[in-house]
Length: 179
Figure 1 (cartoon, one colour):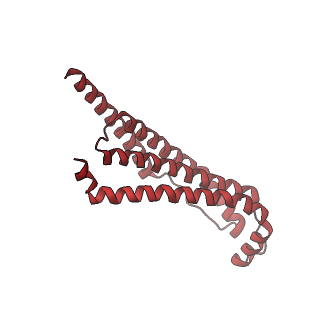
Figure 2: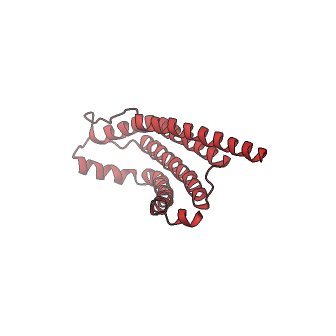
Figure 3: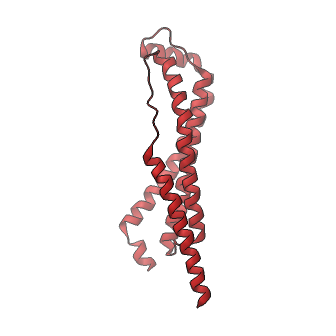
């Protein structure tokens, strides 16, 4: 059975995508986190570049808001990294031939909580984005803030799958206990 699973091109492709995504989110989180102190150190030069780029002389550089925005973005990236780490572990159990285990039910539940947290963090991140953009471009800026129903649907779906996996593992252990 395991050789058949390893030959599944979709599973192999998915495993590569999941692992690559995990590394990319880690790299992005590190880069964004490193840019926070740089945005403070080079705030004067950044303001000059912004004023030239947008051709608005009264632009200002809201250092606190930029740093907060970068910290929120890095937090979201770290949460996505954690999400893909859990997903990598689940894919590994599929490759091993036994994905219906209790730890995968816990992983799915953690993934749902991570997605819910990401959805909630998007709200202050968008607000900070509006503050920063308005400071750069002026009062005509706007940032669309909306609730992502797809994300909410994914949270609910992952909670359901976590329950299905938990119930399946309970049924399996009951069946093994009767044999």
